[in-house]
Image (cartoon, rainbow, N blue to C red; front, side, top):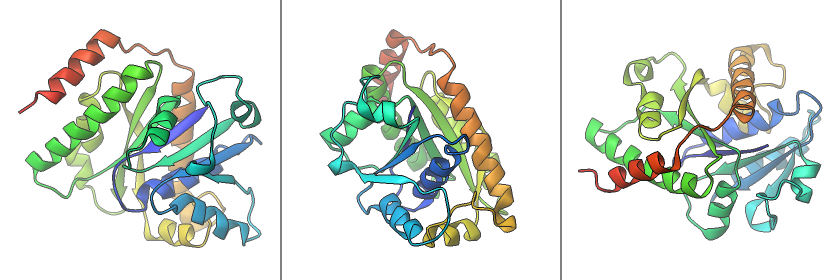
Length: 243
């Protein structure tokens, strides 16, 4: 399965989630690859730091620019070698990155509480939803999961319902049942090449959330895609002409 973790934020939250999910996907002794498609190479740097520790599992990491594979081919060497391929994708736009997104089986969109006015936040969501919608037109089997990420100890996102609002803009998109609570401890672990699943008791709460999210993604992989192309096209048309 190809899991693309995609948003346009410039912070590390998406990469922390991507690296943690890559580790979580190895829980059944599966071979997992992590592809870094970020401008700053966040996930690749994490893998380099992890290689300097004695912590296992190790994750096979690749820079997106070095990967030349037809992921859309179910018999491609990459799909045969790795049970799961996790791609950390930021907001850059290039033909190569768009091709990777077009081959994804599940698109996971981490969504944090918007530090914007409600009007600006909606316009940002509309632009992002339009971009995802166009990808879905060329990848009609794509499953989209919107994951809410909240700062630990702050519940403003529970009122704002950011995941539900973005999911409502995209036919077939689903807000995740799992909410990821961001912590300073998780960020510190990331800086050391570790993740929330590496056994530290202080991180067990977030580790349980990551594993719960992994199970949701696995369930999505096995669920039928019910999005109607005509409905999606109409929705994108509406997004394009919104104002």
